[in-house]
Image (cartoon, rainbow, N blue to C red; front, side):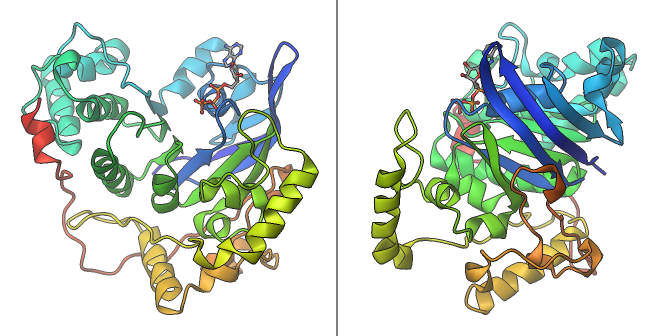
Length: 369
Ligand SMILES: Nc1ncnc2c1ncn2[C@@H]1O[C@H](COP(=O)(O)OP(=O)(O)OP(=O)(O)O)[C@@H](O)[C@H]1O
């Protein structure tokens, strides 16, 4: 089971440049969260701060109840073992074959025997569909395979938390679809806490339990996927629909009058055709699903059978204890400490799920290796 990460009032600057301030959110244990934001809003800086590579100016990051911003380097080293990180390019060593790349953290950080290392490496390569590619060098394989090799390497120490920095960058839409399915299936199988930074709105709409958006040096909103997809907050709507109209400009912020005019025009015309809810990407057949997937499946069913019940959920839910709250009434945060999102969980899944299995891959990607 993954661990919860609770971020409270986090602020980071470089010199006089404030990157973001007063960021508060909770990444619920075992759930998938996505962090969005225009370029340069500090998403990568946020990932690096979570893993302890950058120190925040203020605020706390609580993991398993401990504020890691206060730890000394030696203790931080232990905390980092909880994390697996998938960097944009896979960050593989070019001169090592995939097997040695994936074995690297085990050889560096554990005293396991080579036979035990072999068992683990092959298990993780199987999970990401790379069996047979052990001898390949990173330069000999496609970008999608490099990402999967990076993911296998991120998995070998059995992390409780996996951070993905733009996993879809540089991939074609079909490979992105396969990678998304792999992420959803892996999350269901290993139950770790996932945080994904992406610019790919289709992925952001389908994959996560929770979505957050950074803009103007603040976390504008963080909460359950449905809440953000149906939010009327102009910047959230603009970003999730990839539109020019709204507060986000080309390079700088737009002036208030222009934004107001654009939004007024939109309210007359576009919203009828605007996509709001998107079906959730479910784990593939044969993947054993953790309990929360029962609640997700039921919620999806009611949203889509009942004429998109979620489409009008922009009004904040009544404040109820999380246990009494309807599944789709969890409340998004607005970046202030008192406003943590209330994650949703559901009853145990009853029956009908198969055994965990490797994700099927695009055949030509394999062949092209
Ligand atoms: N080590 C550093 N020292 C100084 N400034 C930095 C450092 N790392 C990042 N920055 C600055 O922080 C800001 C945010 O960078 P970051 O890469 O986190 O943005 P991002 O949201 O991930 O962008 P993109 O979506 O384009 O990848 C940028 O202005 C960048 O120049």
